Length: 313
Image (cartoon, rainbow, N blue to C red):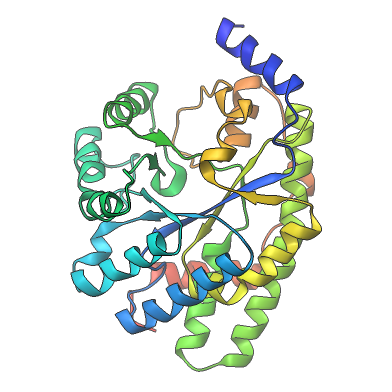
């Protein structure tokens, strides 16, 4: 075991200070999902931010600036609302490419292009972009590619925003948007109920998996998306966190946890979260046999929508 790994494990065992905390992170800003009119995105953004503020949650949103192209002023204003509300913004690349398929130098160029507007907005609020989230959580199919891009991130002042908790919100959100778009409010309410029920099951699973792997709970980093579904559900999600005694903190605070200094030697095509990466590195298993899975109907419908042509809801 390396000296760095040994120090991290000692700190991990000796430092329970961050147990019971979670950072909420939202991908695909300004708005997740199929292309929406700016007015629609504004309503989603306003409701999501109001819910975060009402529940005293300091979140970060990860931006794909390609979304700004069809209405730069209107969609940039949506990003400004996050900063005005006291939230943070991070880089999620310009066009949300896959590092598994795009040559690494082209991927670097896309990531470098991904903060042009965000950097200006941050400067107006006395900030600079500091956090990067990999699209699809794909960090590189080989160690050489992974290390090449990670070196660029460091040189540009970025840290990687990992994920140690998620609730498959993107697949629920796709179906929810489809139901709302065709005016089927009854079906949309059913999707939302299923989403909250699934979230209520998956959060405890992550907590149990972390305890099994690490011997204690880290400060979690929760992956969500800036979707209509989450705008309509943020109060319920906050209630689940309260029930689980998980206190929302900023990403900066969560990342102080020594767990995030543990070695991660995974390289490959999978977009795995960091509990899986640590388990791979430590040659341990997670409790996959009791992993909750989204309802089959939701998964099938989301797969159908994802394979079809993108249309406005």
